[in-house]
Length: 60
Image (cartoon, one colour):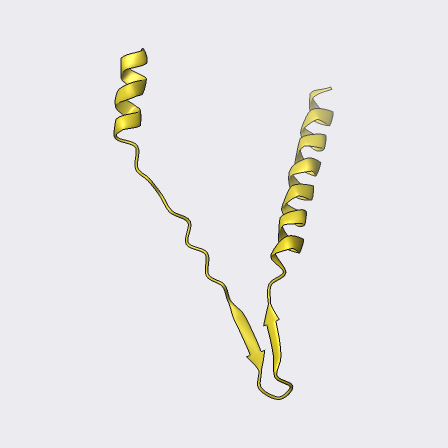
C-alpha cells in the first residue's frame, strides 16, 4: 500500500491559483474601487463556521 501511495504522489499534477486583481477608477470623481479581500475572507470563515454548526446539529 505504501508503494501505491508513493506512485500516486510521483504523478501528482501541480495546479496554480490565478487571482486577478480587478479594480476600477471612476473618471468623474477619480475614486479607486477594489474588492475588500479581508471582508471576503471573514465572510468565508463565517460561512465555514455556520456550515459546521448546522452539520453537527443534524448529527445530534
